[in-house]
Length: 110
Image (tube, rainbow, N blue to C red; front, side, top):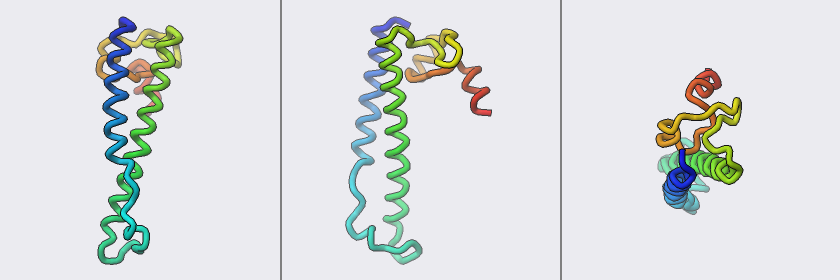
């Protein structure tokens, strides 16, 4: 993949994640901290926990963007971090932060 296209894809991904992170970075409602789970109105507690999990997931994805940007600077973007095998452009178009080939990812997920 051409470096300029990789930069464009990673910039788009960073922008998407940062925007989503802004939506999930609000502090919990003041009253929610005083509610015991199971009490009437504890739906806010559930939502706070859901939002916190989503925020952590977004931060993890943002860290993957930073790693991909570092690989791009080092000239190793598009190569598997595990084997050095080239990652197909189609995979990088779909997942610009891909660190492994599809086969390596499937083996790791098992």
